[in-house]
Image (cartoon, rainbow, N blue to C red; front, side, top):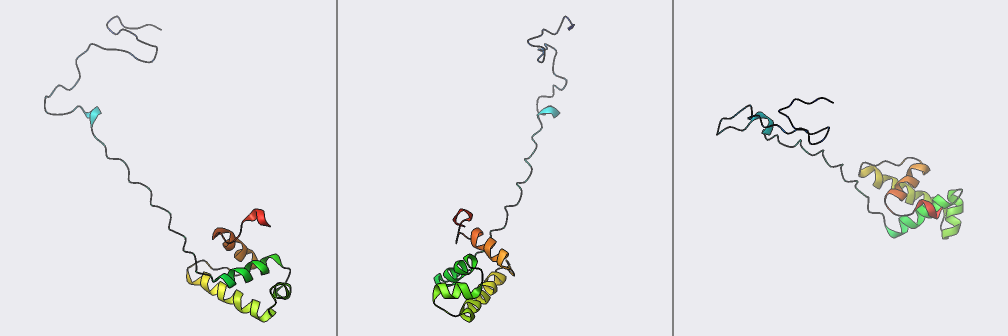
Length: 123
């Protein structure tokens, strides 16, 4: 690598120069030192609103998720299948009210995991 005699080489990537700066006005900064404001931070993701399910609604939801049918969940909880259906209807309405509809069993399972009512490793 050949280097001009007036520019000593400190490393192959850094050169020191004794030449005067290109801009020497005493009150102005050189353009290379211009202060540039930082770009604005990206917006925070919206907080996910969690519906307030009662303890019994959570119990019915988890029993139904673990069961093959509403009748099986009802038998495990000593209630009727109609009562299980009523609880699920109310649970779905609460999720829809906060903007997180859950129309299927898979959707309700996902919501139960997202909201901390259950964990995937429990199944």
